[in-house]
Structures are given as structure tokens and as C-alpha cells.
Image (cartoon, rainbow, N blue to C red; front, top):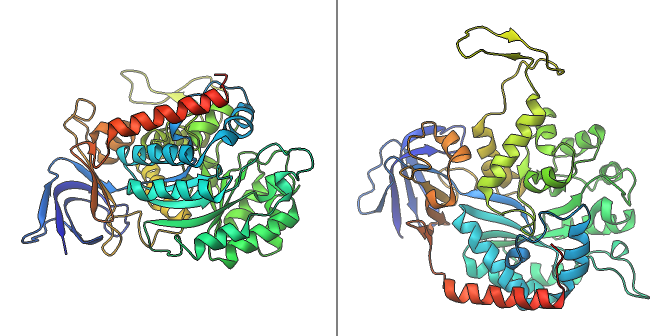
Length: 462
């Protein structure tokens, strides 16, 4: 069995018992064997990481990867533009091949950006062929992924029921669960992305929650807390025993504190997507609210028609949002040469706690995201026995040169080009700053052809 020794790095383990250290990580096969100051591994292949940072692979807890071939079209849309132009407009024009190409571009870009695990929340799968094409792309990329089987949301034609009244297709979940995504330990696994109490009535909610639980799957739902079809949201879901650690909630920016408490008390995870939410919703993302409630947040970028899917940017936006809403403004300042605090007139309350630490944002994107996906027993930290998903981040570029604290360096300075090596399940997927095994000329040609066809079928107003 192949052994790899990552040598001489500054290690951010994300394991509370191991902590930070300068040392080595030993990998055998697909697992981490040891993390220690100095490991003698005999004939192991050595990756010299002297001066570099080694940490768990980043985990992206929410992205619609099928949009990878039509990026940067919606960042300036007014509120509602995404639903008008994407879900009601271009999405119905997708062929299975378009879904495959978009997903492959998006998944490979995740590896380039240091993501080793992705929750691919796929809601552009009008047919089983679309679903299979998305899974094909995830498997071809080599990325670890949770494939979230969602449903499309078209405007109903005459005589057709509204999507909110249609339960999740059990036959499709059964086909996948008993077929190609039957394993819970494979690189690509299955989740059920259901409508939830904002987008369906209580009867559909009951069926969908029970369906996911019957198949032993994580369920996930988009929630905002506006114009809800189940008026009290998760209160009814919780009372009926349907809410638990096997459910993930995305966004939820407008829910009240009582509902938030019920969700956290029942062990469900909450994923916030600040890069998108801060641009289009003038309200606090749930990262800071979950922190104040004593929970652990999960983060993701969301939609690449609006924002980059890279987790470094997601970490930064999430941390800045949490600091903005969690610390407010101090009503004091230090002068340039002063050693004491002087009062200034700022109409906010004094804050006695420090700002959210940079290392906390790394936890959201690693061990906390792993926990949200119910994978923290396998990934999310450099813990012996876990899967060998890790990054080697160099510090010899002009961006990183001179950085002192490793966590701050990653969160505030690192760029995708600084991520030298990406390992997934012990397999090196990026080395020397390049994603391996990708025919870039063919991929670019396929992407351009897909985008050209889609925009011809449905011209987008940017």
C-alpha cells in the first residue's frame, strides 16, 4: 500500500487534541496514519512541505455545480432575477450534456481552489438522464461529493400541478440508493434536496422528510423565512418528530430567534452562503446568529451565476459578515501614539468580546462543514484514521511571503495559486499548482459549446 509522508509543515489539524504543530503527516493508502513532530516512514514518498501550511481539505457545504458553464451572468441582477432568468429561463433549456459539462467544470474548479468535498445541491435534473450526467461528472472529476438530488422548479403549464404540490420523486431516490449511490463510504454519496416548509405545503413536507429518513439520507432544504407555504416553518416539522441531525437548512436569513433555537436544539445543521446573501439580502446572514445561539455554522458559496465557488472567498466573506454583525462597532479608539482608550461618539453599544478569530472561519469550512454533511467521522480534520483529504499551501509567493500566523495567512492572504497540492482519499489531484489529468483544451471547447447553445436558446439579460 502506497505511503506518503508530508514533511516539515506548519500543520493546522482542526483536531482539538492535536492542535497546531510543526511536523509531519503520514498517509497510507487512503487514510491518515499519524500526525507528529517527526515521523520516520522508511520508504514512503516524501512531499517536502518545509515552510508550507498543511491543513484538511476545504469542504464546500452548498453549491449548485451545474451552473459551472454559465458563470458571472447574474451578479448585478435585481432581486428575483435568479428565479426569473435561471430557474424559469435557462434551466429548462439544459440537456443532460449541458448538466455534465457545467458540473465537471465546477467540480474541477473546486479542486483547483482547495476543496476536497462538495455538497452538490443539484436542482436542474428534469430527467434521470440529467441526474446521471451530473453524477458522471462528479465521479470523473475525482472530487469527494455528496450529490444532493433536488427537483426543478419550472412555471407549470396549463393543467400541470405547481411544483410545490409534488412530493420528491421517491422512485428516483430509490433508483440511486439501490444503484450507483448505494454506498455511504464511496467518494460520491447521496442526499435528498427537498422543497421544505418554504416551498411546499405540510403534506409534501411530511412525505419528503419521511422519505429521506426511510432511505437513511441527509435531507436539505432552501429556507428564507419569507412567503412560506408552512406558516410556522420548522415549528410544525419539529413537533411532528421529523426534524433532527439528518436535516440541513440553507440560508434561513429571515427566520425568528425562536425557530432558530428549535432548529439548533433538534441538532439540524444550518448552512449560510454569505457571498451571495450579503449581495442581495440586506439582513444578517445566519453565521453570526448561529454563533450567538451557541451553535456551529456551516458555509458555502451557493450559485456561480452570481459569485465564485471558491471556498477561500467564501471563508473571507463569511468571516467579515460574522465580524460585522457579531462585534458591531467599538465606541472607543486608539490614537496613533496613544496607549489608552479615548471615547468617541459612535451610536452603538460598547463590545466587550473580541472579534471572531480567523481560525474559527477555517473550522466552519472544514470540521463544521463535515459535521453538517454527517461526514465528520471521516473527514474535516487531520486525525489518524480519517480519510487523507489535505492541502499543502506554499508561502513563497508574493501574496504569502512574510505571513506569520498560519490561520490568518490562509484566511486573509492565500490565493488558489498558493494551493500547491490537493489530496483526496490519499490520491494527489493537484500538484505543483496544477490540477492533474485535465484536458483543458477539450474542457474549454465543451464549455464554450454548451454556453453558446444555452444562450442561443434563452438569451440572458445581464
